[in-house]
View 1 (spheres, rainbow, N blue to C red):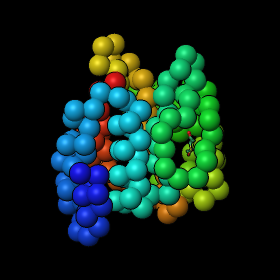
View 2: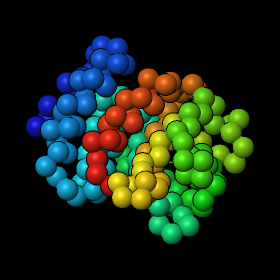
View 3: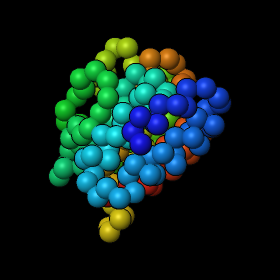
View 4: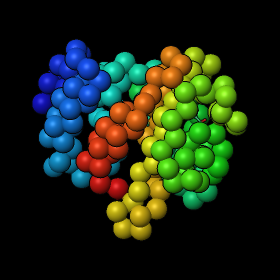
Length: 160
Ligand code: SME
């Protein structure tokens, strides 16, 4: 199964997401372990789209703590309301940042990151933000509402 993940290298953004989703669904459906599923989602997104950095942050008390990711080493902890991730947590909403240099308080884990999308994940029970998916690109303005739509769909496959 896992080796089949990497066939979606051509086609439009939409087609590539639509090819990836059923594969991730099959890969995660019978696996209850969140860390394993986050790890495979991060790897599949990085391999399929070549994003600069893809990873998860988990809410632990008043901080976000780094979870499974693919890409260069990153900030381990982020405070509530800080940076793009902390702001997406505070506002409980997806943030698309076309130019990270123009986002007040952006946390530069790497100077190569130029644009970013952060999507909150809500716990099934309380409906509160319990984790975030953060995707960074080394290109300006790399993310659109299409990415937001399909990344949210991918996250809905995971149980939190
Ligand atoms: N840039 C993020 C921090 C996480 S790294 O990009 C992996 C932010 O401002 O929250």
